[in-house]
Image 1 (cartoon, rainbow, N blue to C red):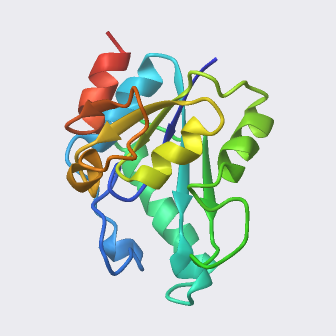
Image 2: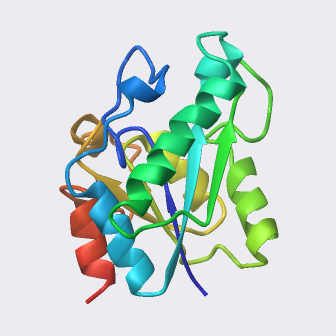
Length: 177
């Protein structure tokens, strides 16, 4: 099975320092939805793994998060793409949960749900914690320069061997050759 794990905010859609708190605030990065559709067409199963601490902070509720994700999946379907699953951590940043990236809990859940060894599975993120969570279970890190990616690129803690791409469309082009 070809599996790829994507962060949401800053990879698929524009990020905000004030959180994406409503479906109206969710806006796709140009080319990102088409990139997912291209991955689907090439046989990739696409999974989202996203920290959503706005829920734990009380900035929005689960119904709103579900509405945001529904907008994302419906907009994606309009260009012929689909997500195989959406995993998220709803806990606040000070939580001791094991699912909040950079901890690997979400990735362990993905491995269990899809019955797959995560070694070599591409993880695409724009922040260090996205990549660290994937690397902890053996994923191959792909940094995109959208979202917080430019800042992350300069971080000395960037995992060794991280491949760097301008955006998700460039990742998809590389993986679907």
